[in-house]
Amino acid sequence: MNDVWLSSSGCETEKNCYFRAVKLLNDERPTTIDIAAESYYILYVNGRTVGQGPARGTRRQNYFDTFEVSEYLIPGRNVIALLVQCMNIPTFMAVPSQPTFMIRFDGQPQHAEGWRAVVAPDWRKDAPLYTKQTGFAEWRDFRLEPVGWTSGEGAENWPAAVSIPADRAIYSKELLPRDIPCLKETVILPVDMPLKAAVARVDNPNDIEIAKLLTEEKHLALPLARLQGFNDWMVGDRSELTLMPNSDGEGIVLLFDFGAAVIGRFELEIHGSDGAIVDLCHEEELWNDRLQALHPVSAFPIDDSYKFADRYILRDGRQVVGNTINERGFRMVQAVFRNFTEPLVIRSVRAVKAVYPYLNRGTFLCDDFMLNRIWDVCGETLSACSTDIFLDCPWRERAFWVNDLIVENKISLELF
Image 1 (cartoon, rainbow, N blue to C red):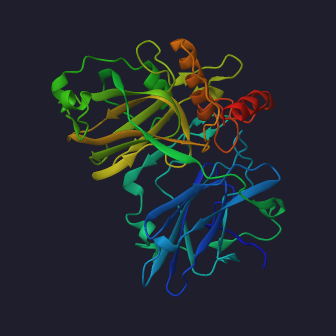
Image 2: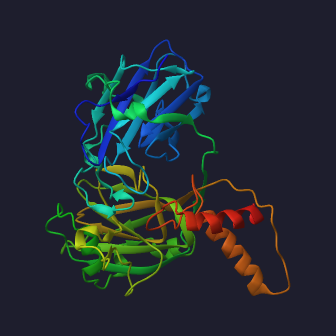
């Protein structure tokens, strides 16, 4: 039986397209799920995250992942849910045909029957490019996310999913099983907060030039009284940090330093208030006592410059802010909390490093501390540049260049 590619109706040509798909299972109890997407997905079973991917493909082929899902199933009704994203433009990461996914239960292709799919309203389609090599920034409004959708709540009212016609370009791509392990995830906590400041209220929260704003806005003095629990947080008791509003509507800038290069996700768990804004900038080093979100590139016009900034608009209650489906590279993250009139409570701040699961086999030790440290740093650098491919860097392009491959492959064989 041939594979069938599925999608949400009407998103074939949508750029920066996010859509959700859900199937309610009454009698089916699959042991394994094969899943592929053009170009990214997160798979949930009964509200629990099973995995995300896939490994990146090429113009001519895609990969699918296989997950054992028995442990996620429960007696009675079960829910399979997907979040799918497709830039729908060529990048250094993917060359997509159109937003779509393929799924099998125990090796049997799934058809559109029983699947519901809807374009996700909480992601802004006209978000600026993060970089032209990696695609669009994330701009997400949590107030528009369907509550409980990963557990199937409300999905019976969504439109039916559609099958992609057999003559479309996605069927010309060879579909292969993933032949490398899934990435290893490690939680890393911040080691320092080198910047605390206030910023003026934003009058136009829909202005998409957030990287320019982050780079150019004036930083003001921040009374520590607006950071309740700060002293405890800085000495390691990081259970809670409360950001207090003021009468001028000034926002708060906090910069988190993780002490090492990270590729993966930044996650900030926060109890938010409706309409408050969190802007994030990811960078490797300080610039003029802040992070530089906007990097004009002399060879490009301003619209092609690097804009290392994402925006999230909060709803009331607890939520996790940070890059959801696209990886980010950073050592530091600058978070700007704007337009809040109620206290914001930060529950946790962490980075989730997601890299190839190397096993260290090469060792080096001598009586020179500096040489030992150089060895460790080089190994850590190579790890941060190894995901589903060898990367040129975890931050700007995350591309698979042959010259980088020649160097990285040789050293990885020595180390791992």
